Length: 569
Image (tube, rainbow, N blue to C red):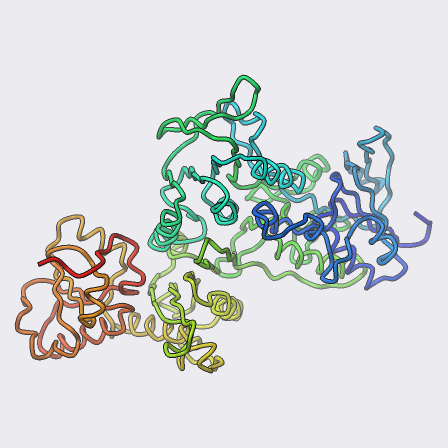
């Protein structure tokens, strides 16, 4: 590096690092910028690896390309960005006193010291590798980098048919989705439900229903004890607390941990999550060293607490802030909402903010509502259902989080909720949002508006509702509830709740037939979406019934067993 020019040294060349470098170059055309990357691939879309494995993305180069197809390699960064890139180079140690980083060329073994004025740590994360016998067998992968993605894809293309995925989180489910038509998939998850860190249980169960419907074997609340190989040293089976299962290929998708060794050895402060602690400007405890991406912890915008959220979107936003600040700027990074979205077969799943479970653990006065609605006007071709769960604090009426899923347009509503939560709005303000309407895109009152109004009614005591999971628990405990189905005869004969305690009276006949219902038992009304269920509640209450509620989300959101076809007499 030439003396006199600002020296910006970046450790890590996948997401936050290249973004910081590119932004720094735009802000300071004269700075000397160097990226040190241990691997051979630069600036690739790690979140796209499951789709490359399944063939949706045909070539791995597409994950490294600009929108116009130019590969972001060392030559690209040198010629287009005037940024020096050292691939195949490991950062070994930081000398904070002399402001140098000792690096090793992995091909030659040669070591050198690189000086810096500003240092950026974008060391990322590493996949959790289970501490069980056999985890190092051939055919066992963790999807930690693009090289492993290539190996997994080759294995499937060469005939690996029995694929075991250890972990029912975001990556595990994306792999199940992308490989579902190419292999027999079994998922082993030690928690009671898939996506347990993203969704509340009643919504996780809906995802599990889709997975099982597509032939994916789910083993929940199940722990892997060991992985066994054949005589050639390749994986042959997975042994769990549920038994032994044959496997041609195993992918461990049990989460990731931040790579903090370099920072820790340099004496930089770590946070309570175990990731690098940074301030609002993404500076570490050394003001000349910045950090971003999967190696740092963030502040949650709702709870204000430190959280670890390793996401590519967050890493890129970090990179932009760091690029500004290492060149003299003063940009801040406010925090995260834990926003995530994924596709599992025909179902889109999104979450932002706090789940109900998280909010209760943090001590909020929680009220929630599950709302089912079509994603566009019911009369417009292509209308599909979505299910929205809103969570709020009943004492302040402030929104705390949202979970949205279904085959319809989830992404639009999720981003509305990100904006709402970022602004700190109340459920009343959300209901007043002037959201776009035309039949191809929404209903006259958008599903988000409808969900907000339902939650307002519940907080205000106008609507008495019950969560479907709570209803199932009460039924399983033997409570003698009357389940009043108020749909049309055609709907009832197509699909319905099982059980002798289900009473069918169409909504239009309810006033004249209400005398058929007992007044000394609790009545839970419902329909397809539960709009008519709520209307049935109000009708019965107007007729003097005092113990009536409706279950949220209706048949669409019921995650348990259903009967189909005409009811047998």
